[in-house]
Amino acid sequence: MTEANDKQAVPHANGNTEEITPITLPVRKLSCWSRFKLFLGLYWKSMVVCITPFALLPIILLNDIPQHRCMYVVLLMTIFWCSEALPLPVTSMLPIVLFPTLGILETDKTCMMYMKDAMLMFIGGLIVALAVQYCNLHKRVALKVISIIGCSQRKLNFGLIAVTMFVSMWISNTAAVAMMIPIMQAVLEELESQGLCKMYIDDQKAEEEGMLNKKPEEKTLTDKKPTKITVCYFMGAAYAASIGGCGSVVGSGTNLAFKGIYDSLFPDDEIDFPNWIIFNIPVMLINTFVTWAYLQWYFMGMWRPNSKEAKQFQLGKDGEEVARQVIVKRYNELGPISQQEIQVAILFLLSVALFFLRAPGFITGWAELITKTKIGDATPAIFIVIALFMLPANWNWLKFFTGKPDDLPKATTPSLITWKYINSNVPWSLIFLLGGGFALARGGKESGMSAMLGTYLSGLSDLPFLLLLFVICLFAQIFTEFASNVAIANVMLPVLAEMALQMEVHPLYLMFPAALSCSMAFHTPVGTPPNAIAAGVANIGTKDIAMAGIGPSLISLLTIWLSFPTWGLIVYPKLTTFPAWARAMANATKLAAPVVAAAIPSSGSLQMLANATNAVVNGTVH
Image (cartoon, rainbow, N blue to C red; front, side):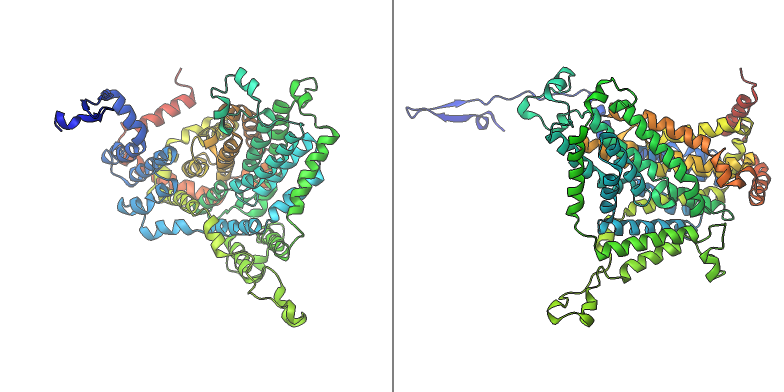
């Protein structure tokens, strides 16, 4: 553009015009380093996706054997899962492509891992849970239990936590927290309106603590700092959901991942519903109660009667009445119990009974009574799903036989749940995430990678067993704070299975505590969805979550670690033995070990790592 075109004519009052030159603002220049940092901040995930496959290629190029090819896939998926460079379910699809093309596992066998018995049990249990949500039965149960427990500050908090724990045993942790948070919010807001508590620190205190830097008219909810009572209630529900999810096999995706991997690797010793319930419920109750006690002590001054918190959070009779009225109001809004709720409740209890009595062990199960064909947990789960669509939501159709003409229904009766609701609420992505873990376990077994890792980890057998178990639980809890619980379980469990075989320890002894520990994420919002939901709604900072999570982390670590050498040996007496099927698998692994060792150069990094591990364990390195 020419200079003349850049100029603009400005008219004056006398009719004359004057040309002026517009001001050109200087263009901000960025250094190469600033551009690189900006690029890295925007596209680091794309760089991980592009660079990681090539960075890991030496694993295959240096020694092209099935074990290393499978290790390449495992490491690639681990990096993608932990960084979330690709969506978790997309990463979980990689075995379908890489296992056949790398000669690890056939396409048919790989795809079969994505629709196993455990997967259909998960889908069936999830649909039953959605039916409970669909008719609001879970809200009715929750509000009724809270009103029975009581509405004093401590009882109310305990009631909310206990109900969240119980509900989370049967529906997803995320749904349990999403259900309880509006109830907690309504109670706290009503108490605040009566001047009995504060949900957020007032402006003066916030300014003194340096929390607010905005003008009063610019402040929003995200600028407010929650009070201790708010953190106690909201994070208590989030923690109770994670703990309660361990109570039953269908309680969380981590449980289903463990069951699927264990059943796939050791088909002679499958995980059953009754023993899971019997073992986990006491542990769950202890974790929940002590977590509530810790939160009460830390945030609300329990056992500290002279503390500021203890004096501040005493509701008194008036406060209890206000809280009780809120609960009663919420319960009355649900109306009288409907025919739909009654039928769903019956089917829910029937599903629990069918899971529990399929093969209870102490008596002949119903599966053995009706057929000699093996029946898994997926069969009763899908039976209940079919029943949900066969039964009507109400029995108005009976009026055609007994009612007056004016009372006859004008429309068809829907089923207890609709497929549209299921389709929009089932987390289909979790199916691929679970399937990816099952495929990794099968690929590691077929390729010999698990046997190779077991050989190198055999030096750990010289460690005291209780110390080894503690380290496994500790590492599982640490890793699950920063990545998907199911993804961590998918990576750890196959390795622990082979380690147990090499140590001649029952595989359940190492895998079960690790699986439970993978659900215990209490310190970060990204650790698990319940943490993220509670933190987001109440604007709870990461520091507050980290401090609140200290107690639950220590409690769950100790209870899981100590429960297996004590209560676990009562529920699972087989843990003290090394079963024949496991010995046969261990012997097969040992026979394959010389072949694996011959295929790996003695100067390889894995061999050096193995030698160093053995040296440290045997005390030769000082």
